[in-house]
Length: 257
Image 1 (cartoon, helix red, strand yellow):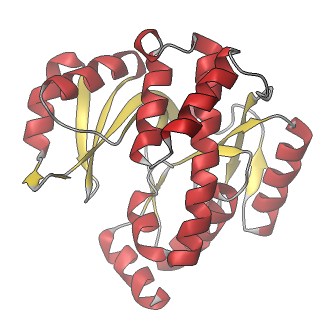
Image 2: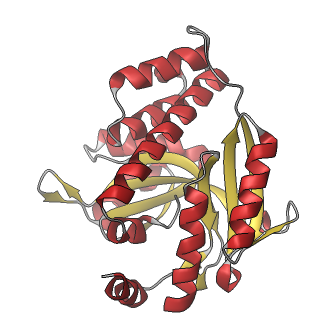
């Protein structure tokens, strides 16, 4: 969930984390299944599937679940659902623009749940195209700073990926975010592997051109909406153009304690 990592690592207690972990596993398996259906079941020849499997492994999805998802998607095993990708656009508290990417086998259910979540939590849906122009499709790779006791810095990542197409490296605290053109994603990921730098995820994402700074009140309201949307089974990814400073995060953590 783009831009949500700082908040997500600080605010949830164990019960909430367990619930979200189960939902995340389900969403990762759906991604694998669709990637295998679209590009075949061989990760070596299907970069999208390769990256989906790597992300699932990093999130502790079992090997058996991964293999079954690949088989369902590729047609080697029956039982796969006919998932469709739908993108909803809207605005949240503070005027934050939101793209809501759903992967669903029931478009009517997805539309109803997204609309209800938005209207009940200070958001509103918008017409197609009225929000998406604020974002551009980019390759995004997340690199953990701490790797087996060694600290990976921005210079290390830039040196490894600049020639492969990296445009910028952003410090997210526990992770470094490598931004590239979507077409350079595989090259950037491969360059990191060649340099011996581990990564948590590599995927095409929607990156906002500009961000809206939120104060503590606006951030609390926005994160509430974000959490409700994230909890929907059909919602696969969320992209938003918000910015929350470390000071505001600290204020929210203090109030949540």
